[in-house]
Length: 326
Image (cartoon, rainbow, N blue to C red):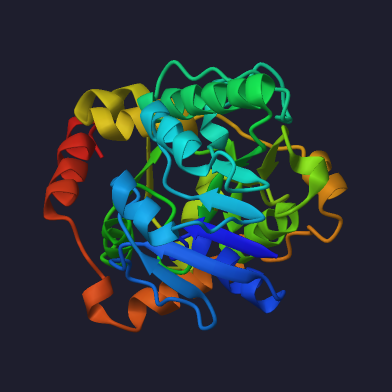
């Protein structure tokens, strides 16, 4: 099977590239070659900027593929560009959407693929919804062979699960309080990228996936208090100082942080994975977050360059906490 990844070396896509190659897929990566992760051995590399249609057409020439996955489509104009590039060139086109596109806050849990797409809080999510709308219209009107994949919070060893990344761990290690939105009891799902890859690669060339949408998530459910404490334990902190501040207050201090919270993380999100399991029977997430947290901290601790502290965010923490008598 011949598969093209646009990108292929990112947080989520890197594990998918490695698994696709292990399964004997002839994988081509089209990217600019500027990512921090190495290109997996065995992949063919085409250098081009997906934003430059002429570059891409020159790089692809007259090639066709059994499946194309574009990992970096975020806006409707980018989806339109891909329709122009890949009509007649692929037997399947996988759009990487976002589970944050689901109704926020959800009226019913668990979330299924039929949960309405409606997020009034976050422009990122609304743009992903608009991309889906355009691609599904192309499927209905011209049989463009789209499959929609909605990751939720998917991570690898480089990615800490909260705003501020290592700054939060640094505060924990210094005995300083760290901010947890709300009361820390909202439920969340974290998915290791190697678990996600089993679902994604299983959809490549799958005839039951055309015209369908799937989310691919872990079955492990954690509160945010548990997530912070799990990271703290992996960082060698026995009991972190958790300071609970409501999401609206945090949004008033930092609109970008607030959009991410109000549009996603402050609401409980539990997913029903029945559909992806039916399409990909070997999809069974096996990596718990405590193991993932150990991988994350081992990666950060292996090189001091990776332990980046944001002084502006650290100062913002202090202003918010002092304003609430913490």
